[in-house]
Length: 454
Ligand SMILES: Cc1cc2nc3c(=O)[nH]c(=O)nc-3n(C[C@H](O)[C@H](O)[C@H](O)COP(=O)(O)OP(=O)(O)OC[C@H]3O[C@@H](n4cnc5c(N)ncnc54)[C@H](O)[C@@H]3O)c2cc1C
Figure 1 (cartoon, rainbow, N blue to C red):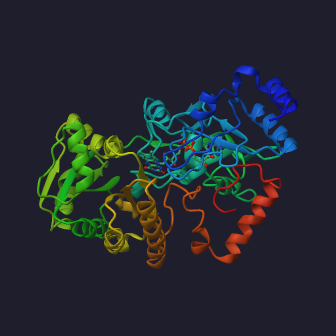
Figure 2 (figure 1 turned 120 degrees about the vertical axis):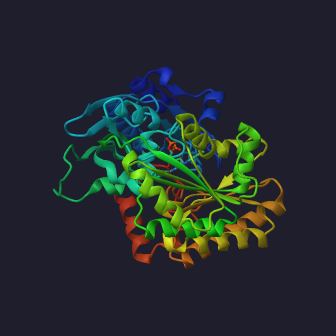
Figure 3 (figure 1 turned 90 degrees about the vertical axis):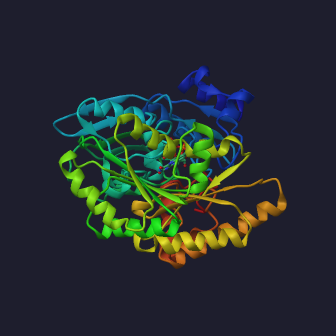
């Protein structure tokens, strides 16, 4: 960081929004997977400032890593090549909620749960619901095409983007899409930026589609004696034509951690539990529960939440489980794969076998309704043997998942974590088109360098 660069930056943002103190840089240097110290942290407050900073970073050839809340599990917002972290958290205003047009216009630094609550207060619903919604930001969600617990019925964030404002690496401001539910004018650039992990531009505004608020959900917890029978039930529920709004699978190790930390009790003999929620209204519950029981014929026990408190506890189990696991662990690594729903049981069996061959203890949770599997591992990355066992297991898992028509990432993105494997999934034509797109939009390679293998 030269004095000339610092002088230019402070002219744009003022000294108080250009952070250089070691403790500030440290605070923006990590996610749950990786670490890398930035030389500087900038805190823009509007699109024009983002544009001026990027134009200047291009002139000085300084890497810029956009960052939302840093809840990534893949190293995505970590500045592995130094330079600046551009933290979007000051751009945290909801600009408009329209009940008639069923949309919300928002800055990227708004926390997802805050946006959900604000639109709910107007009788509307923003369905994408990452488990990290209480902390992550809309900008980070768009940059990773976040999914979550409601994906089985409502899809992912890409399904809700009407328009985006994106600042390109050279400072140009691109407005793409708009406020219309339908538009086929020109190429659909929104999709290119959704899931681009901060490599193609910085998202500074989004217009998102909303839906009318669904009915208060009915939550059921179904216990099984094995993960495989639970996985078979997931497929049976879908085949049965049921439309759950959530189908979350948790194994017994996950539930045990939740019990230990939050004092919740679960069925003792269960090896797996499926959280199944329906939000079509109370008149549908009797039929849905009857069909759910029939699809889960090998379940050992089914419990329905009778009160709001019951439901809140079941969600505390699902949402707080990861924190419960890390409480007594130095390091937890969560992997993210997705497979077709018809392959879930096979996928789980394969992952379990690979973990056991490597003597690794695996905890498994899944957004099972859309085939999104999250094996988690607690190990010591400073122990060379454990580190090597994990690396070998991860490699085998990637190959295995691809061999059953799965994908390397359902929602967390590639980041640093899976950058070595992307060539195994994408075709040579996709790889070269991706590189050409990156070269076109960011010829100097300043945006989030060192990620995704591009
Ligand atoms: C306990 C836990 C549960 C989780 N559950 C889910 C889940 O259910 N579903 C899911 O999809 N993910 C989940 N995640 C992963 C993570 O929360 C998501 O990837 C989330 O979308 C990241 O948002 P963020 O604001 O924290 O972004 P960050 O982690 O800060 O950044 C993520 C990526 O987006 C880029 N980025 C951020 N903001 C912008 C911007 N404005 N413009 C351009 N690029 C930008 C960054 O450079 C980085 O590559 C979970 C994580 C944790 C810790």
